[in-house]
Image (cartoon, rainbow, N blue to C red; front, side):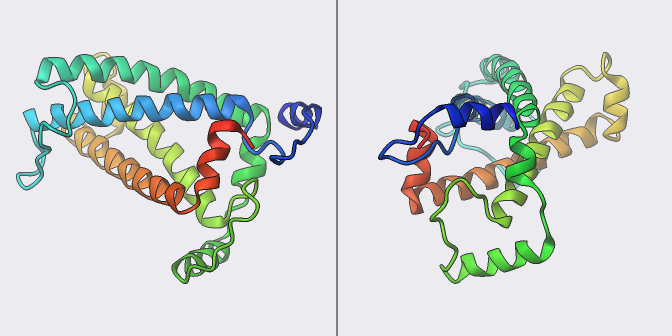
Length: 211
């Protein structure tokens, strides 16, 4: 029996329903949301100072930091918050067995089936404690994107001190592109995530109160 299962079994179900997300999941989720908001907003401001694509520009109204130096301060502060919170989340996710139970296995045929069901509006959300195949794929993908964005960010921040890491990404310039596309994938995930939370409001409630 895992740590999470033991803790959950000690908490009696109430009229509101059983525990869907334990406290550590909810805390790390909202801390991560704050960190990502800070990272993305300040990252857009930093990007504008040296854009990779001439046709992509982020207005200052949606960026964070107002200018390059201010954005860098926000970015570095959020970087440590994201990294520390991420380590706690991944460690507990593995130690409690939550990742194994919730995110695996991921079968291609199940992903296709659930994706088509979602397009037809026939994907059930009755049991929030069970993730469908599309959710599993997206959650694993965003965890991997988070790891890539932190590592590529380190290689950009300290290309000399982390020269081997920078070389692993193909050099400083390539690392910038990797960092950008990792950010874009996370923003895409967040857009879908927020949309689903609005479509299925009880999933948002569960992430706030746990039930």
